[in-house]
Length: 157
Image (cartoon, rainbow, N blue to C red; front, top):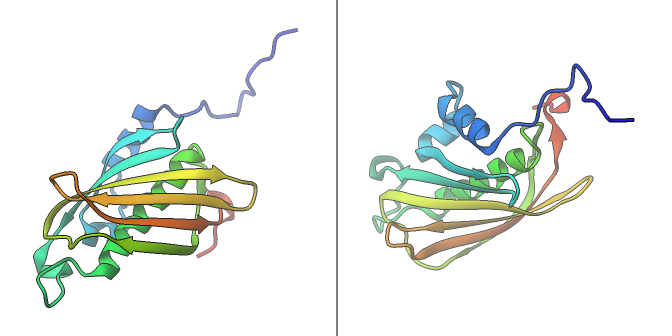
């Protein structure tokens, strides 16, 4: 006997379909807009995303003319959260329960590349990692986090 797909079960999304879905979204959260968030790559098999941030000087600088660390934390959180959505096949959000950030060098205004990945996706927790890089490929900051996978239909803000 051969198995057949459930008629009402949606087909799994491809990496390209998820990438297009993010790129065409008209409902980008205001926090993502402030950070200059743009997704540039998706890899479901590796539970990983690549993103770009356009760090604008008029919004994000500290008195030393560097990107304020809290904004870098927000960028890392965004990378890791989107990686969770991708790892779930776009069926879950994953609110952050905790995260730890290490800063390696100052970030300047302009393009910042981010990588987010899910190290382990469990039944009740997801363990995440994120990195930020400057245009020359130098590591700016790194974070690890714990998130709580929650189906979209169950999510209550």
